[in-house]
Length: 276
Ligand code: SAM
Image 1 (tube, rainbow, N blue to C red):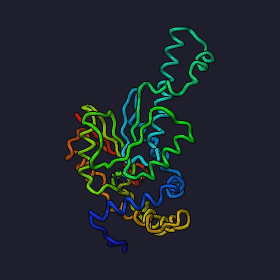
Image 2: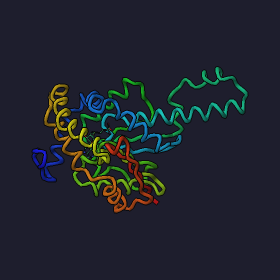
Image 3: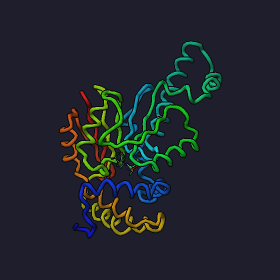
Image 4: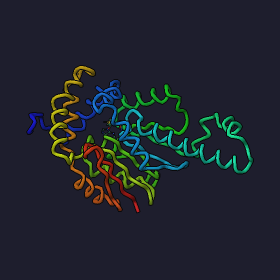
């Protein structure tokens, strides 16, 4: 290729992606912070603000890996649900805020029936995610499922929202994954994808290329002892279709009202579409 990386066939891609995430799972979170200088946290927060889920929302987070989107979803729902319940209690029973706070010490009651299903093809990533959930005290509202985005192990019309964050570029047949997203969403359900995209500022683009090709593989080697996996990461970002082209692919899968928002000069974009 232009950058001197090896090209892989579609059949090889699945195996290679599996190996990459098997290999980086344990260092995945620290590498994300190092490589993006922590900015991936803001991008993920923005995805949640865009989703703006309500208590009761059923979310499927595909390629959910180590749970970053799932935990944010639970936090968001808890904050929403608690706020709503507290306001109701105060209005109906005239309790003080202190009395109300005492009533809401049990986290498990505060999701309003919401659940997030995390589906990932890699056992190791799921294992790290489950350990993180335990360590951070998440108990209710989570289900971890091993499965392929191209052939989801779920019934039709099941979820209110489908998310995939930094996952779809790793899928071998993106069109199949999009069709599956459409199938498992309820009518009225929303597809949201956070993914690397095309930088739209020439100066940032130069700097970004330098950083990606000179710094990231070195960081991969130094921190995770794995140059190749991080070289793959950079290569896969460059191969992923730009904003408009990906929008058309989402429309081809049957989604409507498809739109996108570029963040940080297009380093990433959030695409949104509805099953109507
Ligand atoms: N969503 C997480 C985040 O934003 O931090 C993890 C993203 S990580 C870069 C990509 C994830 O996609 C890995 O956990 C990998 O195992 C998963 N993945 C790759 N191909 C997949 C597929 N066909 N189906 C489901 N998950 C897949």
